[in-house]
Length: 132
Image 1 (cartoon, rainbow, N blue to C red):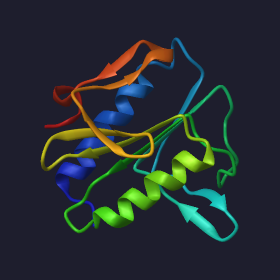
Image 2: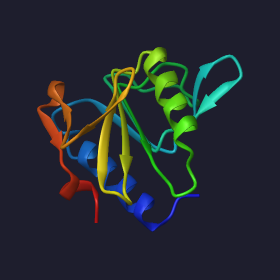
Image 3: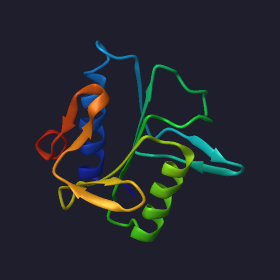
């Protein structure tokens, strides 16, 4: 279950994208249901859609999907979710760990990074922006 660090990280990360709405047509959601396959629903911590608002239960991939680790998450399950997002067509798949204050991108494998980059928005999200 999400704890204080998870919740704070989710809010700060979402705020990073909300701040860009004056420049880009973004739809930013937390805990948003996405139907990524027949009978398969996933709910990332943060999902960002660019230019097109999704259906009430999304049936199209977001531009960015972020999983935020909780203490009780199992890495095998998290990696599986990240792979599902990528296979579904999500352009930027991220994992953030608010407890270890680490960030990762996923492009077939996890890669620890010092910032989460979205070149299309000229955005680099750094740990000090999303971790309290």
